[in-house]
Length: 239
Image (cartoon, rainbow, N blue to C red):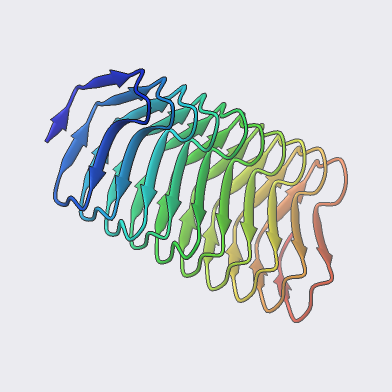
């Protein structure tokens, strides 16, 4: 177990786990490292609770390459030059009550490159220089009660992905779209809200065979709900 460690100023990583499993990381801080604050590679079945990755030159917390079945609760990635919390090529992870905030180049929370079958609940991406929460080329994820707030681009951005469930998520006060699907198909969006954004509330571009039910797009500077180059979508009881 790694508990209450404060590690910073290293040429690469603050805390580094490789091919390691069944560890508990609690109340650790990785700060001001030249790469990543807390880094797991090919490491599964670990639990990360109340950890912070801050002011690192790359990522705050990075879960990479077949790091599966991990649980992340109440972690924070803040003021990093890359993404606050980043999962790549990692599946079946649970992320709950995590925050990605004030990261200077990329997203608050980012899942990429076949990060499939993950569950994201009550996470927040706020005040980042690009997106609040971003999923790229990932499928069969479940996003519930997440928020993308006051980001310089999109609140929640889903790109090149399919068969995901988005329920009760909110994008608000973003400089671009609240919730944006691009090149995405066969997703189900229910009870999501896009409110008070500088462009669209909920937007689909080049996305097909999606189902949108009981979503709200209101008080946005442009359209509430907007579809472009998208076909065979089903919209029911949206506002």
